[in-house]
Image 1 (cartoon, rainbow over the protein chains, first blue to last red):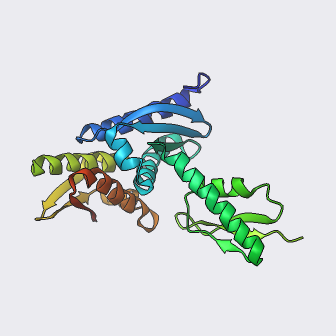
Image 2: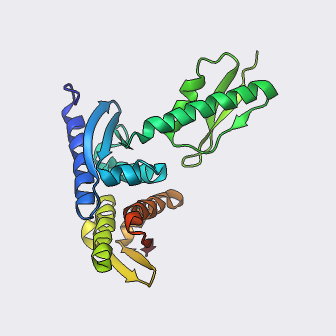
Image 3: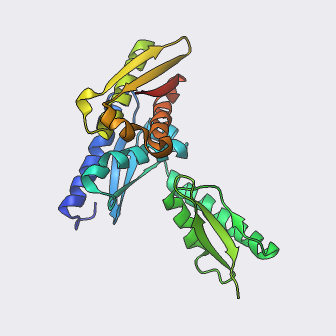
Length: 160
Length: 84
């Protein structure tokens, strides 16, 4: 863990860890809090255990819904400046690779056709991957439209 | 065995719901078991309804999804209903 954590960030981290421990202790599932990593304003927490990999590492919808509920439960105490990001079984990195490839493929299509392309709705952290992937592309720009959970990225030709 | 699973899922839903509301002491989760599925009826204080439903039902949907995840291993069909 990062040593320069503020006391409030420490509290947030231990509350997130305790939440996961207590929630799954009432089940027969092997899902436990693993390593935490503070990357302000995000606390990255990895779920470990056989069922963490098999259930939450395989289905992003499950991982995202759990992450959303923990954040929702802690928002009263910590506000929206601190956010938990959950991972399991390397899901986030695999997903990031898929999204980067999707961004590049769609950008190529936008350039070829000269028409903008809309992606399906994505959560904020995944939209950011699309924006970052194409940030330095001189031929296209990206922006987001709509309201979460239906907010989506649009890739559009850069106007000369 | 099925009873144990239902009971542990009931506790799972209860923990999630209690963590979301302002009045955890009023939370009650009833379990209604059918042949192939279990429904968890969530009762909360009227003041807390918004906290378990959310805008456009987003929190209620997340509760359903996470409960489905917890039941997946047992191939159990589960439903979560917010009862006003």
